[in-house]
Amino acid sequence: MKAIISGGGSGGHIFPAIAIANAIRQRHPDADILFIGAEGKMEMEKVPAAGYPIKGLPIDGLHRQLNWTNIKRNIKLPYKILKSNRMVKSIITEFQPDIVIGVGGYASEPTLKTAGRMGFPTLIQEQNSYAGLTNKMLSKQAQKICVAYEGMERFFPAEKIVMTGNPVRQDIENMTATREEGCTYFHLNPERQTVLSVGGSLGARSINTMLLNHIEEFEKNNLQLVWQTGRWMYEQVSEAVRKAGAEEWVKVHQFINRMDLAYAAADIVISRAGAIAISELCLIGKPIILIPSPNVAEDHQTKNAQALVNKGAAILVKDSECNEQGIHKLLELSNSKELQAKMSTSCLAMGKRQAAQKIADEIDRIVQKS
Image 1 (spheres, rainbow, N blue to C red):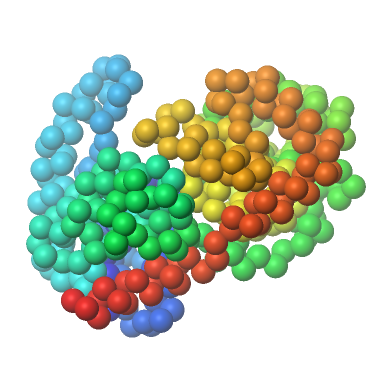
Image 2 (cartoon, rainbow, N blue to C red):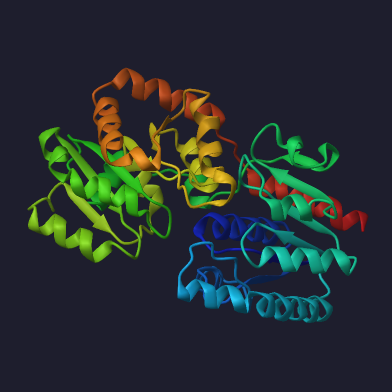
């Protein structure tokens, strides 16, 4: 088995890609798996750390916020696309994969488009409830499209769709950590309710700002907070928490490596509405307040969140209303054990397990046919 897996840019694309690679390797121990990512993006660090080789493309996206830096980057974009296409063709010609898998992100588009033109079978893993323009275009030549939400025939040919769910990190899917272990790891008081805030692997400014503005509410309401700030606001948040004397009940982390223990400790989770974050949260079944990022294509995070809200599995707060509504909804939820229990049950009912194994099944079928 020789497979190319392409995509990245954030943990939401990288973790599923690695989960798929692990599932392939599990059933084909001698499989040759190569990743293709975007230079300077998170995958160039995370994929080698997971034990897989990766090649980087100079690919980028269109930067819509107009300033001189972005204008210069946009001017260079056609050159980067042409160069990336040439590099992909060379990589595929040399590697000769049995299948090429796209998980979303900048590198996915030139890789799958080139592979399809060259006659290699392709598979798309669409994580969101609302498919982006790139995957809709790539679906025309793909053999299969693995999805996590119902109703995706709005975007893709129905005969190509396979409902698999989203692959998540193995330590989350097979979570055995207890609340006691989580509280010990994060130095928390097991008698207090714990709030976990995760704004995605890169952080979320509006969520961080909302929490910064209301740090005192946690002590007032006998709550404690495990806070993943992301890279950009870590120093600012750490300093503010230290000045407020809140270090006993507010635990600040730039990035949480042991998410299984963070989820185990949490009674309530505040999160962006990225597809993989939602898939993980549905498996662990915690009450969730979702604050979708407004800075994503086709506002797909709001659509992801709405799918849970419709089933009574989450509370949605708009990013623009986050500062006031976010803390209000959090305190409301923390004061209702009945609502927490209902949301937890609804959330668990939406969880889909063994997604990576189901995708690996589809990969095997495609390779056997070709």
